[in-house]
Image (cartoon, rainbow, N blue to C red):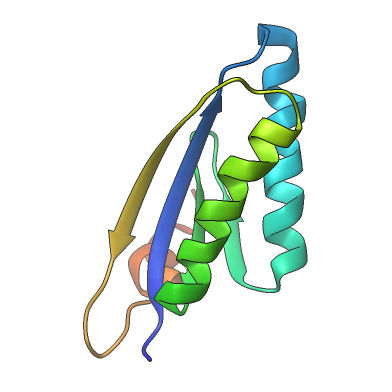
Length: 97
């Protein structure tokens, strides 16, 4: 299957001082997954096979709950085209910004 991009923003319902530590756990999981990713200030974008990335999205919800969230709101964006899409093709001209 061709590569797709999936962006994930998790918003765990925890006390404010615990928000970043919970999000850090999700990012750590993404890092260990082996997929290509870029962390941004509002979301993390991943590149890979859609099924793999959607499984990461699912596990991210579970991580938030395991870390104490009573609820998790997530925003997921998918960029898909049959021949594949990469993060590089979208941002290469902005690397020096």
